[in-house]
Length: 106
Length: 165
Image 1 (cartoon, chains in turn red, brown):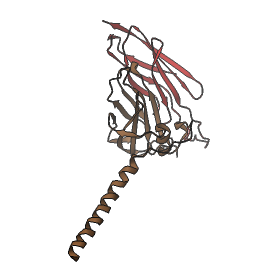
Image 2 (cartoon, one colour; image 1 turned 60 degrees about the horizontal axis):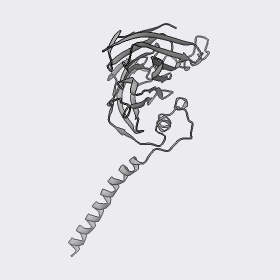
Image 3 (tube, chains in turn purple, red; image 1 turned 60 degrees about the vertical axis):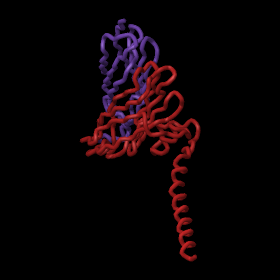
Image 4 (cartoon, helix red, strand yellow; image 1 turned 135 degrees about the vertical axis):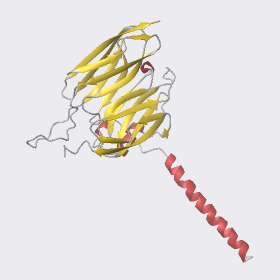
């Protein structure tokens, strides 16, 4: 699964870090039919979590109401230098992850 | 004499009318019915049921939350939305979760975001699928357990579910 993460590389201690994640995924609703009239089974990324230094800081439980190629923008409070790691899993048990490093100064 | 009694009757009618006006407000304040325990809101297909599963009988008040949606969306496949909650996001006072509920989607619960003091700022942006012109509601639960909400109307020119029939 292709994904992209955008995080500012440096942050002040106690400041905010903006995290933007874009995942390539159809977020299949389960309401569509293919050319042969067969229903396409639902397959969405139902769980997305973000860990910073091993601690969970943000989690999203998504449904078919989130657009294909889900985009998320959220904030994390900068504590110490470390990695921001995002993991997700869809209903076909395909999981993915992407991470970025943040250097905290001050 | 007859004139004064007529006035008294008018007063009584007026008082009854005022009482009627006061009644619905009290009815609104009553908490919603608690659904069966363990109901997963993601499985529900009515917006009312979804709200009940989220609130679990608690009341929600308008304010503190801001939901930003475009007024008009050309199509419902990808509508940008932004939720912002007025909260210091400290250990003592933070946002626990934010739910997005659609009025017309086949599955009303769009997403649930779980936050904590480490999230720093209660602001989330994403993109939603919307099945037609409707009102979207964002419900935030704070660390003290209280629920706050904001609703936004969006005109969707082409619904997300048209091609799927």
